Image 1 (cartoon, rainbow, N blue to C red):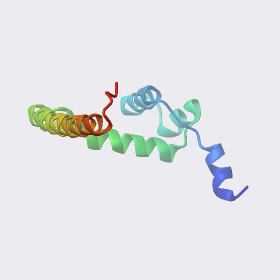
Image 2: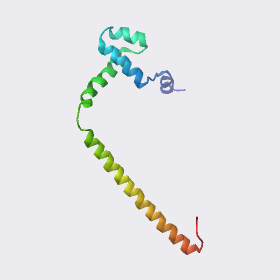
Image 3: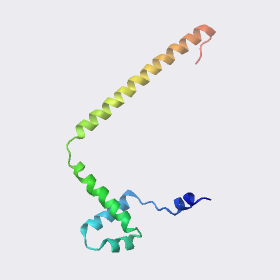
Image 4: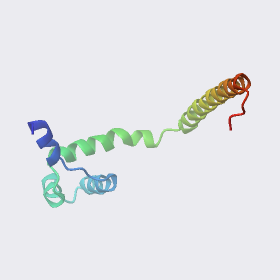
Length: 107
């Protein structure tokens, strides 16, 4: 077993809920980062990374571009639906042609 796979086995994963609760505790500043890290068995570097992620992402919670994002998702979905219907039409035509050539109905 190489070093890479050994390190991967020791890596802890934390749920989004755990991360959120932990960072809320950090932001309250009632304990030091070291105390919170010790209480929650998380390295202080990890806490700093999570805090930075939260602080960088907070402004986007207040942006009003939800309509643009939804419209873009809907447009992409509609395009995919059109492509799928085109594929269904193509396959149906091929099936009909094969049924004619074989003289048998495939069902």
